[in-house]
Image (cartoon, rainbow, N blue to C red; front, side, top):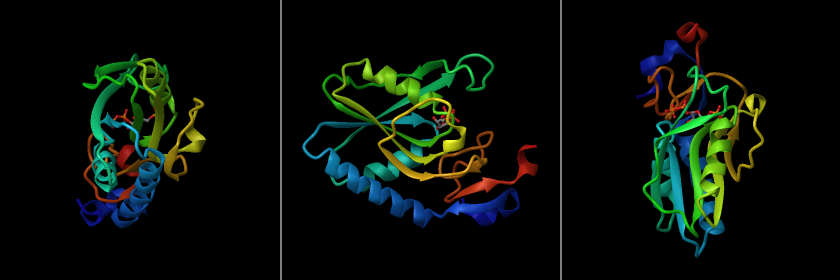
Length: 183
Ligand code: PRP
C-alpha cells in the first residue's frame, strides 16, 4: 500500500521504501562481514518483523536460516509487566550457533531484553539484536543492540510491518500516525 492511499491518517513520512532498502543493504553488508564463516540463524519476532526479515535475508550474500518466534506480554495486554509468554517457539536447535534476533522496532526494550536472555540460555554461541528502528526516549530496559537502522523520536509510527490495530502494516514507507486516528 502506498502513502497516497492513507494520506489523511499520516502526519509525515519518516523513511521511504527506497531509504529503508538502502539502510537494510548497509546493515546486511555489516552482517555479511561480521558473521563470515559462521553458522548464522536469524530469528524474526512475529508479526512486525516479517518485512525487515524478508528484505534483510535477501540482502545478505550468504546462506542463512530463518526462524520465527511469536511472543506476547502477560497481564493487561500492555507491555508494562515485562513478563513475556511464548506463543510460537523456534523450530531450530540453537546449540553452538550464532543467533541474530531481527525486529522492526525497539520501544521499551522489554520484549528483546527478555528474548535475548531466553535465547542465550539455549546454548547459542552468540545472541545479538538487529532492529530497524529504536526509540531511545521510550527505552526502559538496558539492551545491547548490535545493528540499528535509525533512532527515532517517541512518536506513533506505522508502516513496513508496524501496525495500529493490525492496520498499516503493509504500508511501503514508515510514517507517523495522525493523533485523530488513535485518540
Ligand atoms: C512490537 C515489536 C517488538 C515490540 C517492541 O511488537 O515488533 O517486538 O513491539 O516493543 P518493546 O520494546 O516495548 O518490548 P508488538 O508487540 O506490537 O507485536 P507485533 O509485532 O505483532 O505488532
